[in-house]
Image 1 (cartoon, helix red, strand yellow):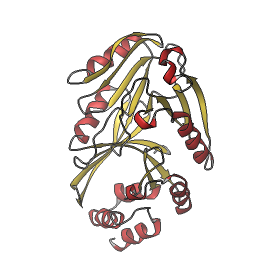
Image 2: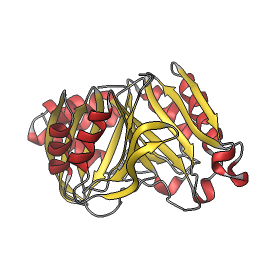
Image 3: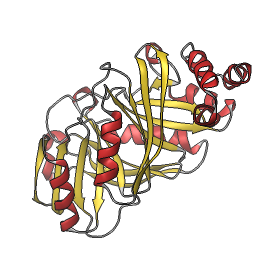
Image 4: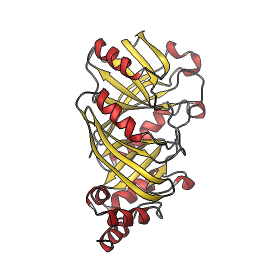
Length: 298
């Protein structure tokens, strides 16, 4: 699994959404599918998918968080026909945010929220500049408007402590955003440990806050790495639970041990249940305690 993956939280639709996305995008597949039990949400479906080489994790865990367009998925298309084909697949029962059309930044572009609530931007990448086929895009709006540049600087500083991280592209608003947006981020790209992200300050006055429905999983090799990210990023103590944290910009992250993936995929039913009950009691994950629970249930 990649060092960082995008995580999508659904009420009950994770399986249906995974199947839809894998059918919609070429060269895509479901990597794993499992279910855990006896959680606060009851039985929970967990899936991992690759969409054109980009990893996503999906969960059906109840109506506690609702996906919104604060984080959207930018799809870099190789032709206008590819944009149109994806739009045709995704547009039924969708909420169109920007109609499929020609804009100053792209000859063919459209933005919608699909029938599962996930926000997608389909754009003809005429120059072929995109580093990856699907790129999570963070939109800073409401009280967060104007914070995109500071957030990127924070993320790249944190992740550069464990590997490569940098801001690659930064285009500020000029006349397009009006005087109130001048100098803010119209579009930017940054890289964290080999994964690309986009960021933008919203060009209109609305408030769509980040929440736990879309988070980013950081796969850690040891306890020291977990401790590092937790210390650097956790800014909302009441949001700490089961490896989840929220940073000072309101974005949610899951700081998970890589070994847990093997436990939950390859362990027996009793071992998976034991690990589940162990991590449900944790805030920051304790690898040694998870390994003890796993071994004791063998």
